[in-house]
Amino acid sequence: MNTTGHQTDETDRIDRKTILVAITDLFFYTKVRDALRQPDYRLEKARTQQDIIDKALSTNPDVIMFNMNDLTLDAFQALEQLKADPRLKDIPTLAFANHEEVDTWNRAKALGVTKIVSRNEFSARTRALVDEVINNHVFKS
Image (cartoon, rainbow, N blue to C red; front, side, top):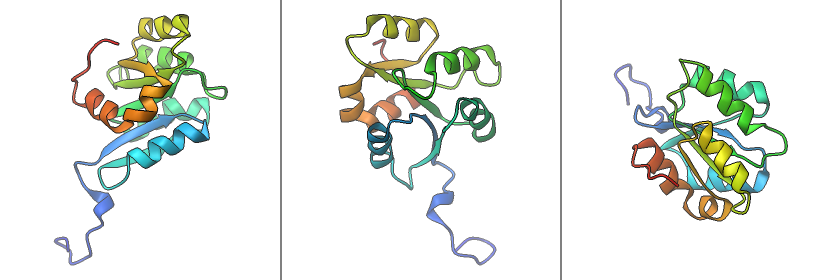
């Protein structure tokens, strides 16, 4: 119960982390959803390119996740927009990409992605990677 006599909803926890998920691939989105269950995390899904910036502004996420190989959302464009906006430039970003695409990794790093990992590592360690990025215990990939 809260101070007004209403039942407290566990989803209203103050310490819950908001994750903006800019991933349209159903397999990877499901991995994220399963790894970051409530009550510790609140997921916001970006379904369009404009959603990324709009939801970053409206939800003030603790981290934004990108699939650098996404066929629907342009992660590179989003990173450029985030880094150009003083209100958004400091939001940590976690990305994954095919490990063989060296140019993709280098371009993401040049655009300021906080951490980029392989698709396999992302699938296996989603929650640990999110916690690492949020807690600023990021080692250069």
